[in-house]
Structures are given as structure tokens and as C-alpha cells.
Length: 279
Image (cartoon, rainbow, N blue to C red; front, side, top):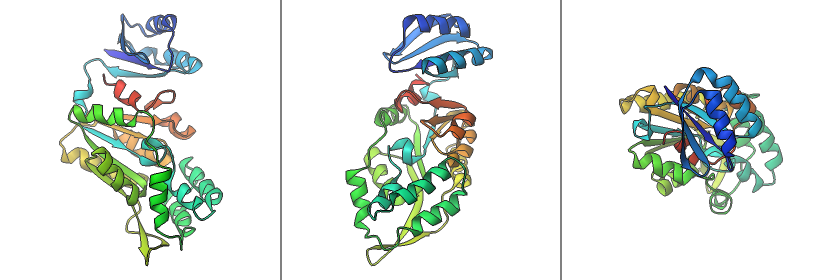
């Protein structure tokens, strides 16, 4: 048995009743003003529910009725354009007037059109010679958490979940976010800096799609968890393997390829919507 969770900035009562009919649900319960759960829904009705939600711009998910936030032991997140609103490398590039060139490569990589390792190497090379103080400027002046991020994290953390922030971005930012948000573990790429300037190179193994999946599985196994105790969220093509490895993989305001392939989606509400799926 499943509950159908519906979320949007505004949801008309008559639409909730229609969704209950379409899904076979017997009870409608409010989570908050933007989220409702319909108990007793039948997942076989997914297609008609999906069509209705798409036409009304609602986020939705079928979640096992007996599964709650206390069953989630690990939450895994991408950083750029998922936990935070920006792509850090694009904003770093803006500091040396190269944002259009770098952003074009970033966008193609996130759509899955370029090999991630190659695209990162190309982008970082363009940053050679930039003063490392530019990284601090990006963090203090441009980096913002995605709407609902802190509510989402606090909710999962209060229920006992560990957190992993794994990013194809850079440790300069993930480490600051770890301290700010109380994250259990962070993994990202290391920018090489010599004499206070970026060399245009990355130190060590690049954090790509396969590495994200591998690190999720490693931490899951360390914690002794099942797949259905893991939530993962991301927006780019390099997040898809980890979204599939998690019991609940959520595409968050994601690129079309990710929207098409991810098990769950959030498009119309903030990251707190991921927490609502398990309330």
C-alpha cells in the first residue's frame, strides 16, 4: 500500500479530491499548506496521476505507506544547482571574465552531452592564474542555499540520518558548507593552488558520476543500511548513477535527461519537499 504525496505552492481542494479518485486513495491528510498525503493510493494508477500532476504543475511521489523519515539513514546530495543555487565554477570564471565560455561547457556536461572528466579539466584550465581570493568572493557574495535546504537537512538530521555532500565542484565550498550545515561527510575536487593562484589543474581523482555512485554505496554499507534507507538528490546527468543507486533518487529542478530517468522529482517546491515525501 502506498501514500501519494502531492506538493505545489497552491493546491485546489477539488484537485486533491480528483487525485484521490485517480489514485484510488481513501483519505486526504495535510502535511502543511503546500503538501498533502493521500493514503491508500495504488501505484498502478501512476500514469493518470502523472498526467494530472504535470498539467497542474504539482510535484508528486508514491511512497510505501509504512515508510517514514525515521527509516531514512543516509541523505546524499549534489552541491551545485541542487543544495545551492549556483554553479560555483561558472561564478569563479566570472571573476576573470570567462563565465560565458565556462558556463556553456558546464551546461553541456550537465545535459550529458560531454564527458564530465574532460569538461571539468577544460573548465578548470581556463581559470589558470586567477587569485585564490576569488573563491572567497564567490562564497561570500554569490553562494546561496536552495530554498528549503536547511529545513530539509534539519528534518532528516533530527530523525537520525547521516548526510553526504558529494560534488563535481570544489572542496573550498563543500568544506564551508559542511561546517555551516553540520554535514557528516563531504567529497569534492581539489583545486591546485600555487603562490596564491589557481594553476588550472585539479589534484587527485576527479569526482565524476561513477565516483558519486561508489561513495554513496560505500557510506551506505558503512552504516549498514538497505537501499530503501537512502535518499539521493541531484540535478545533472552526472548525478543519475547515484540517484539510481539510492532507494529514493530525487531529481531536483533538474535537466531534462535527469527528469526523464530519475525515480522521483521536485520541480515546483523547495528542497523541503524531499523531506515532505517521508512525513
